Length: 295
Image (cartoon, rainbow, N blue to C red; front, top):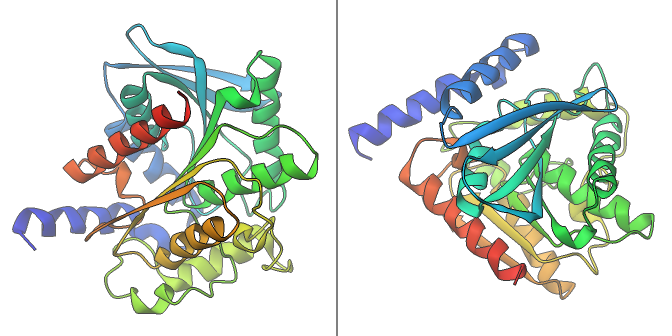
């Protein structure tokens, strides 16, 4: 590892190191600052508004762009932190790479608002897009980490309600298994600069204490994925949630769902947020996938 890479890893550790802190407000503020700093670009306009008292944000490029398709983004943060501003580290890149508008929303966070509040808010955001005249086929649902979990849960909920499904899914390091049974949880603990098993155990309690973690609306890995839309997954080789992505990909393939996974050497959890060359390369791959399914 080069000195530059070592310095970057240390920065990542410092920014995300609050995972070991019980001070949720401190972590939320840190993420807001991180997102405002890295997501600040003259290429983008951020338009804040509300959806039934829920704060949301349109992320739009400052140039002619397509309005026929839209990306609905579910931010990460372990269901306890994260925001539209924190998500700018990814949503801005997606908007630039795809020339599509991105809608991101501030769903209610645990422990103040435990499960199923976040999923209810995701459905609210989906309904908003439908009321704006978009069809399900016009929407790509994307998300990182817990937001990847939520993106999958949203599709499960739409299926349950016998509604039309989105055009596709784009998932960054999705947390698909709240039982935390993946072998990478222990195998990659020493090389993961962002997450720890203890952190995952703690936040799942804050999000869904007393619930059965095997339930598909908590662990979509165990849900019925037949009929799911085309799905693209990205995961870093150096993260404890590596198994969550790989097992999801294998299950989608078993269910005959069009699925693709890219695994990035030496990368960490949701590395796409970071100011590194590999992050932009990954976002460009997302754009290629989206263009491919939107032909």
